[in-house]
Image 1 (cartoon, rainbow, N blue to C red):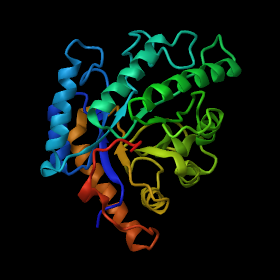
Image 2 (cartoon, rainbow, N blue to C red):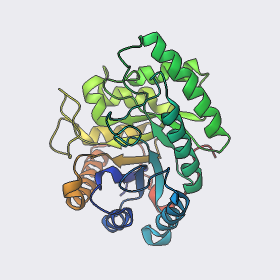
Image 3 (cartoon, rainbow, N blue to C red):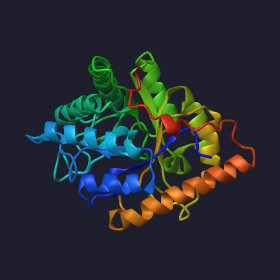
Image 4 (cartoon, one colour):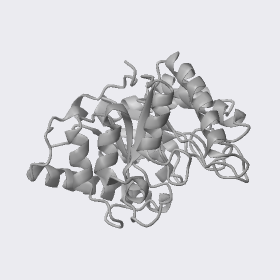
Length: 307
């Protein structure tokens, strides 16, 4: 029995593979979805032939799963894409966010072309020359502009809380949603590993708090002491509890493995991660901790999240 949400894997964990080869591996392993990180080495959104690359990616996704197609989400966490000296900069809370805004607009355009479920993004680390109030003002204004841009293209945005960033917790994300009037075009991404480090209510509390707006889930193991993505079994995550909670809150979107520092062992980790997820789901189901057992993965639709 398969879970009611879509198990996926992030392409940022396949940095040593061409994109087409990474997709073939994930298809062979049996994943239902792909979290596509825009930027090198796979799909540079600013490249002259990026349109052709997107068309090829869309066709490849549709061929997966025996022709029934794989779902997709667009991730935007590429390091050093916009500034070769400073990881992830500029961000939405920097004084000049022009490059970040254009990158996220391109991500929305590509997501529309792919019929992706959402575009996941983060706030950024507050720069030294800005107060929290400055950062919040910048973030609110810029996300508001992105929401309008995405809404015009039928794409959902999904804000990911990140340890150390201005939006660090689900409560922070909920605050921003409230400040913007909870637009339907804006949801929340939850990385379950992050919850061990920064969420007062742990993974379960964070998922339940985010549930009405949950658009995207990232799966990984992590120690409780610091932000370090690890393969399942090498941290402190209670994976059956994670999957049971997702089922209990009625989540049916993409839940993708996020191991951006493990490309050197990607094929094995893709196989082992899916096996671990299926064991955890079987355990959660057998102990009666899930209330949903329907398999939505047999009828994956590539519709966007706003439909």
